[in-house]
Length: 551
Ligand code: ISL
Image (cartoon, rainbow, N blue to C red; front, side, top):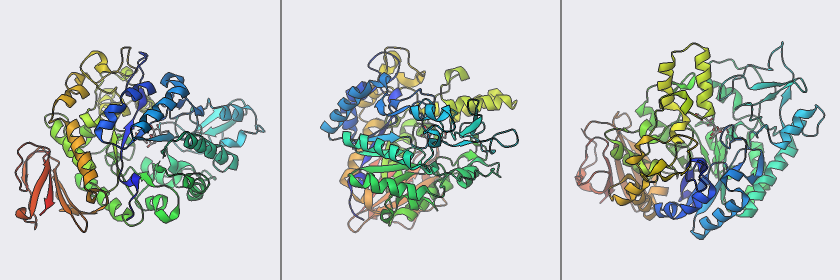
């Protein structure tokens, strides 16, 4: 395994709108991130991933871009970006941009032109089709509800949008589109950015005959119809060859429909496509046939199996990305931990999991202080387009909306988007204006200032674990072996190389347990735990995490 900076990196994901507001308009901005560079640096991370900051009408909070080379004014505009990049670099931090190339905004001038007439030179930048039997060209449903085809009266044709109707899909079949997007990458690379996260990159190549979907299961529809289209790898190789390979950068492709079979094809080193992918096998583990708003119980053994399978598949020629939360999912401590009586313990346990697996580690803002899900009392308090569309659909179907609100509490993307909790003053110190999304009321207790002042805080545990990983490259590159896979309570694994060996025991439950295995306690010495005064044995209290080194 050859050493590479991005394999050893810990990446901190920022959702700018919710990070820190310096202008008082209730929305975070780039100047706010700049003010917090010292905080980020102090965590010990190497790189910042910025969710989209470009010009956008914000139908999907920036994932609908109307100008790929301009920074949104509300975030501080181009000058604020240049300043932030300079400040990050001056502090030895790298920057990863989020590029949304599967679709643009309908307010992008390419689409504005494309709509105008069938012979407009931008027409083929998007997918336009005639209807079928008085309806849309096929029966596909959008990620955010409703049919994926929107009728446009002007030219009496439908255009494709896999997400909202304000996010028309770009036509990668058109070489001009590919050239435009390569120029966008070059534009940011020339400014000095250090990498890209590529939004829904698995969807860019379409099945051009647009067959009707013959399944009711949304996961199955994504895999069989929307993702991994016939030219996906050709398109990625072209991007790599023409642009990416010329720079010392990192790339991570996000992708619904990326699974254990096709995932390696995106990232194996000799294929020259991407460095890593974000797959969702663990993140959609509790999604039923209807998607995440049709939730299932959490299957812990399956959860472990996902990490095992991916490690096994990628370890020779590829590289994984390790994450448990982002701006699209509920808070990780509320999902995988216990966010009530064991919040601190379980948040630290999850930190230990993240920072002892093989792969590049991604930490989402606020998880380092154990921020939790929020339960707003009414749907009017929610902002996320996915949440609101699912609500409308459920209502139209006559579902019990009191029950549905409980699903919203559990699954809404707004759980992860409430403003960052800096201190216990007005609006958690996030903004002096009215925040664009309400805060989680628990900010009086859960906030950065408290965490910095408490040496036993979740934040300080993250710092310790990040530093420990950096000093023990065995935790980055060493082999991974899961032990006792069928155990319904404990995630147990070894990391080892020629010089070192670690044993990690994580009790994912509210009950104590004595872990039994052929390993002998006296061969191991305890080096880290999330509880004070932990004994160097295999007994685990509720949500206890222990990391041992082999003597
Ligand atoms: O958010 C999801 C589940 O709640 C996913 O289905 C998500 O829509 C999918 O993973 C794609 O996410 C990315 O592209 C979307 C954007 O809304 C997300 O924020 C982004 O991460 C469309 O650009």
